[in-house]
Image (cartoon, rainbow, N blue to C red; front, side, top):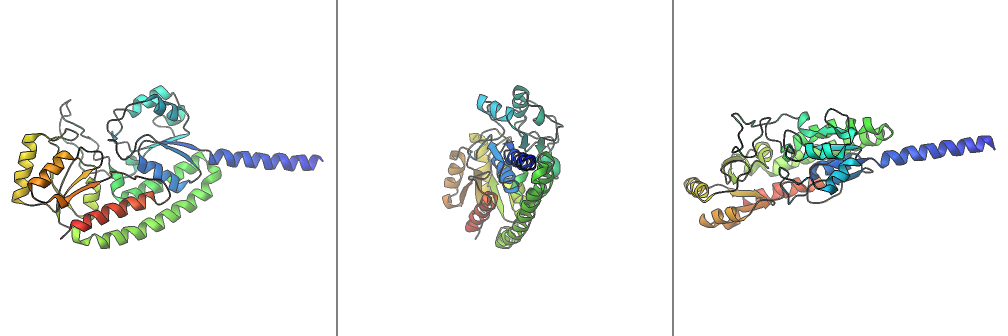
Length: 302
């Protein structure tokens, strides 16, 4: 009888431990990190603070976000000052020691990759959304995304050791699939190399770098500052002198300036509106996002 009760207690303890591991709650600042976390630990409960129709620079620290962060075992964010306008407030109001800076539960993706185009100059209130550390939108390069995955997996395993074997297995699967897809995407995207694009903001800066595209003009006069008539007139003059392959903006941007420019150039078909991050869930969400971006760009390449 005692032996039976001991076995039952041990079985219950294991079950509870496994249940706790699978109940890991993760607060993701952006959808790309929610998708990556789910790819590495499918059993985690992941909440994304933003979606693809929002500008991650400017998010309101709503009570619902505070509540989600208060209950999180871990937070996965971009860092490099992308969330500087709202994440510190959430951390302070949530009062959750697990997800404070410097704690194992606070993970910043940008800490694990090399950033490009750091702002060199004096930052003033009129500088716009500039980043002294460099462009924070690192997820638009699948090679950097892979580096982040390799750093995030052991951090997850450290917080839920019982899931280490599963996390390692998921990481290997993610690495294998993404490496194969990078090769396929680069082959398909060969016609894009050296071509020019007019864009808006630096959301796709790492995408251009990876695919060999050349961003020759930005619809924003300063990062995060909406296009002005004078700036658009200069961009039109420049684009007429050297027509770009396409005008590319993110879905969370106001499309009217880009529509005006493409209309003035007589090439509305060259206007491409892309989501700046994943738009759905599932283990293949990141792969589908890259599929969409590469295919849409290739479609307009002559």
